[in-house]
Image (cartoon, rainbow, N blue to C red; front, side, top):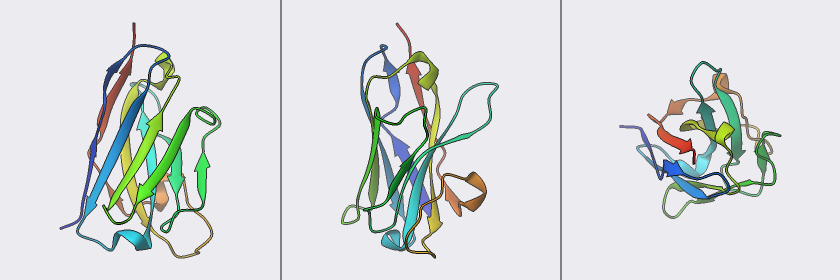
Length: 127
């Protein structure tokens, strides 16, 4: 059974940091790219970041570039999203998702490319 389970969300003050984790099971993890998405109340889902199946290639939305870092540990079937200098506008439910690495040189931040989704973890940035 395919599972993606996010953890690490919570309440943090502006300027603070959080590290989200996405633990995967039920599929061949190192053959899949992983993306992080977020959805704030009343807004469309946004592709925040992605990382290629074997690592080495990452991509970020302009809104988080320089503040968020994505990484993965294929031995642990886990992807991380380190979020620094958090802003109130980062408040959202964060989801991880997986898509099969077909091209070998690209990862997608488009939700329609994703094959599997987690249920999300809430991040609230507020003083």
